[in-house]
Length: 289
Image (tube, rainbow, N blue to C red; front, side, top):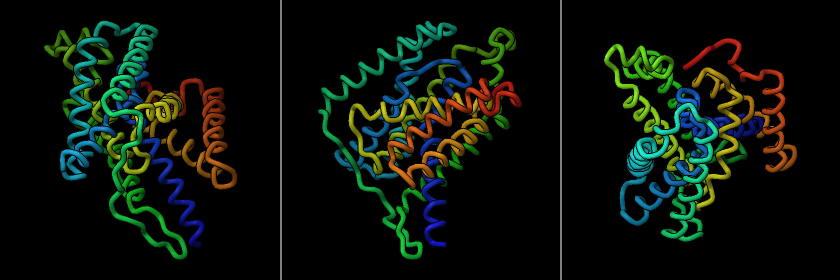
C-alpha cells in the first residue's frame, strides 16, 4: 500500500512538472501560433531571478518565486514581443530562427554574468512520511500548484473579459480592431503573460533542479511535446497530454532508468501524434480552452 501511494505521488509529481513547464508555452503557441524556442531560457531566467533574489538580496523565498520571478520575466517577454516578435507574426520559420538566436544570446549573457556553475536554493517543507517511505513536501506543493495553474488559466480564458478579448483578438484581429480593441496590445499582453508563467515555472523548479545557464535545454523539448500532443485546447490539451506523458515516463522510469523514461515519453508522444496528428483534443476542440 505504501509503495502504491509513493508510485502514485511520483506520477502526479511528473505530471505536475510537465504542466508547470508547458502552460506558458501553451498560451504563446496555442493562442498566438508563435514558436518560441527561447521558452526554456525564459524558464532559466525565472530560476535565476528566484535564486538570486532569495540568496543575494535577502528577499523572502515565496515572494521571490511567486512574484519577482514571473514579474521580471513577464516584463522581459513584453520587451521581446515589442522589439522582435511583433514584426514576425504569421512567419513561423522566421519566428523560430529569431527566438533560437534569442535563446543563444540569453545563455551567453547569463553565463557571462553568473558563470557556468549551478546555483540553488533549498526546498521548503522538508519530507513527508508515508509508511516506510518519505516524499518531498515541496513536490506535493507543486502538484497543487499545477492544478491551480490549469484551473486559473481556464477560468481566465472562459469567464473573464480579458480572456474573451484575447481569444477574440487572436481568432479575428480585424473584427477586434473594428470593435475598438487594439490587437497589438492584446498580442503584447498575451506574450507577456506566457513569459511570466515561464518565469514562474523557473522559480518553482529551482529548488528541485538548481539553475545553470544551459538548463533550458532540459525543458524545451518536453514543453513542446506536451503542448503539441495536447492539441487545440490550451488547458484541456495540456492537462491531458501531461497526464499521459508524465504517467508513462514515470512508470517506465520505475522499472528501468530516468533516461529510458524520457525515451518512453518521446515514443508515446510520437505514437499519439501519428494516431492523432492534431493532438489529443484536435478532434473535439477548435481553439482556446
